[in-house]
Image 1 (cartoon, one colour):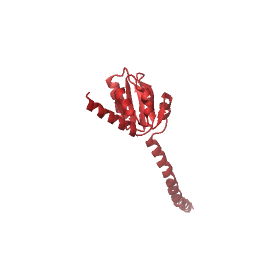
Image 2 (tube, one colour):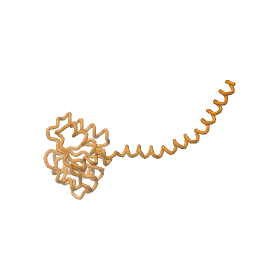
Image 3 (cartoon, rainbow, N blue to C red):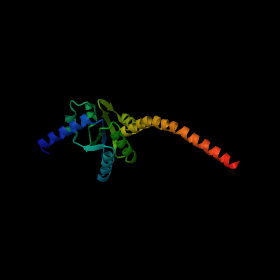
Image 4 (cartoon, one colour):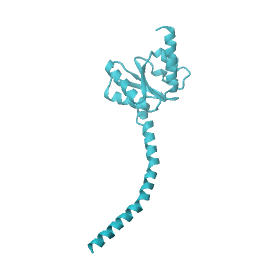
Length: 172
């Protein structure tokens, strides 16, 4: 890798560190290519990405960034999982680590906040952006359905009363 490629990689990593809602750092020693592809596919489905980068270049890219505290985790064979959604990458990595013991989560960063192993686990248990939007829409939609039910109720009550009167008239 020549100097121009390294500079381009440092710039890309810098953009990742600035724009991501969460970055999770893990050791991936012993993962097969198929397992790594599975991790990448899971991250892609959740709206995130997985990146393997040289630790030295990643540390250079971290200088002056809000999540510079994760530089201490960049030793050995590290993989970065990141997403704009502050929860998606953490959920993907946690789920993958449950089924694959070769992936060791070291920590991460959520904006300026450094996360240790327990912090990443706590973030992964939070509801994602889509789950929050769905619950808000449900709360907004509930009053409307209640109003529609209340408006429709008198009409159905009148219809059942008329039906009962009709049945009594026929029986008599």
